[in-house]
Image 1 (cartoon, rainbow, N blue to C red):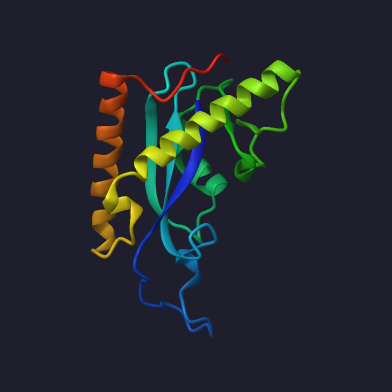
Image 2: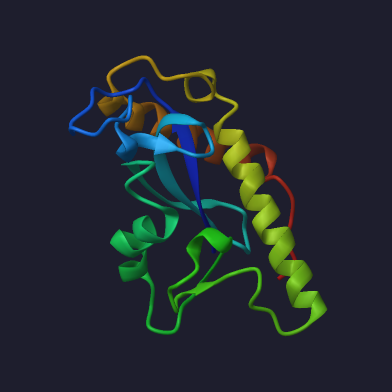
Length: 166
């Protein structure tokens, strides 16, 4: 499977520390240039199905690799590995884009990761996730789960994004 984190904008939570910054850095997402929550999403390379979601986590406090090591790494079999982008460097269970044997493997990895980005984009097509989430942030997971479910159902009834030969 491919694994990637995806960020969603939320209202700035109240500060909980005494820093001089005007915001709480544990929520800061460099991708959003503001507060956000991050989810980990895994997609089956063979089928294109969404097979794992985990979150939400505060973006600034939890980089992709830390979220992976929090739960998903423990779900993998002894010799099982996942494909991920460069945000996951540092774990032996992860194969990054730089770990390839020949050009065809390099191309297959690139296509698999591109499909994963397409899946992440499909999740952001839902207006509630596309815009700044202005509700109680504890409710974000409900809307994210709903978007994942509807997206997966669309894959089952209308086909997934595109096939990957891996």
